[in-house]
Image 1: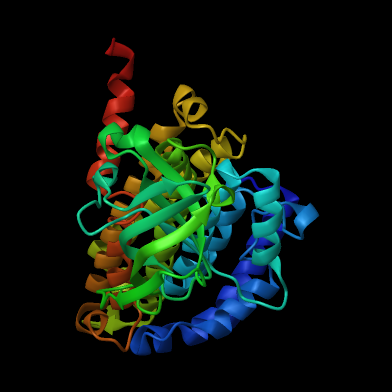
Image 2: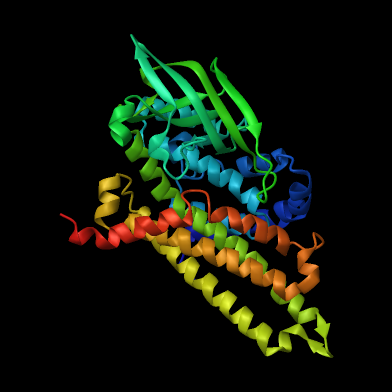
Length: 392
């Protein structure tokens, strides 16, 4: 049981209501058609889910990582794809939160909060040849006088096809590896920004994942987030902030699958008794529920530490947030995959059909083990943190 503040409890209740009344009735259709759910984006905007973490002085809700986790979990209980859109949007906003100066924040936050426009942000780090090994990115920026010129391709960009703003990581000095990476904001209408193909995915259908190309896109120093060479730290700080929210998404998907399978087991009769009366089913449900609660505890523990506003990466490392953030993501994602698979098993043949939501939940759960750093990479992060005290 989470010990939430009054504000967090209110945010959770609003998200729960929106999930049940607006998102759940649309979940099957969104997964079936793959159409981007602009109607839900409008609902999210009206309830502040697209500017949840922005300061009140700009019209935001002045929320935190815990707030983002609560909203994401509730939406994910009924639709993984519909929870991914605002989650990925906030990942795109986080580099601005972490590194932008006051003038940049005022300019960009006002665009995001503009009540007349549904303004979506995308985080652009991954490339065709630089996924888990993002430091080998090929997207480059060359400085010429007062301008920067960006060239390259980003891939697997969530919200890419529908975003108005991109936070982009590119190398200004390839020989310097991570020390040569810088962060920029790029607006969709800049000449040279090209939207590429969208991927045909296993799950999270309705949330677009797209290629973005940059062909001689001209930028100024005002587009630079932080200083040249700080991009890698900005990206890693962003991922540390966002991983608990991905964990919350996984917890939500798992909880939705458990809730449905428990109700099904209670109503379904086989061999003259309810499925819920079989000891084998009871053991499965008990394990599923226990694993979800453990994952949830990890997620909100990490979120609480991050809400101490330790956005700088060195501070995060000093108090072990890197490790806890990775643990929250990797464990929750693995739990989501196991719980949704068990939910399909409880429903048997029915669970394997699209008439029931658990097969969709199982497909959606798989994505949480891959994006925001694969679970294998998270285990490397955790192990390195554990062994750090022995390193010279």
